[in-house]
Length: 182
Image 1: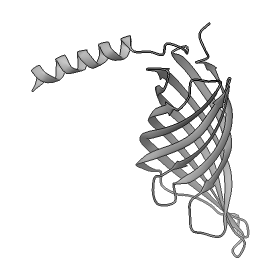
Image 2 (image 1 turned 90 degrees about the horizontal axis):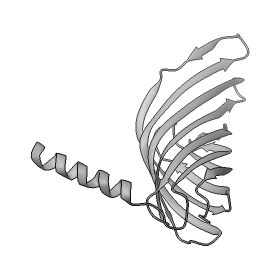
Image 3 (image 1 turned 180 degrees about the vertical axis):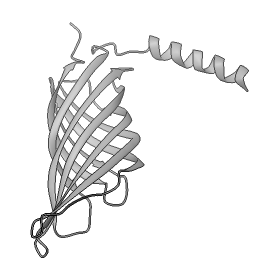
């Protein structure tokens, strides 16, 4: 089995190194910020903020692979007991984006798979208590739709993890590199 896997990995590595975009610079770094809305069924759920850093390598003019690093702070509040919960979610996902166009306006669809970690703090105002929930790590997926124009990016994604960890994010940002070759 090892005799089959090693040549296969070498072949894949060589093809990845040789494959790259002909029209665009092969490396780019996305930085996005946006509004995150938890996917809980609770009517007292409030939104939060998400920040993403994602380096990409363009395998071709239309296909990019990357590593998405995201942090999100989500809020939950209950007016009946005057308590507030803050949930922090961090994720580390391998991603692939497919671009539908080679023009200056580039719509894309993407998918990420990786680990999501959630930690929570609860603040109860009437007696001053604060509690911490255990840290939870789960495997999840991130489907994404977006559009790039020059060095700006706009996207909508759903972090599908399950439980109270999942959320929808609407983001805007910019990227370095990855522009058209001259």
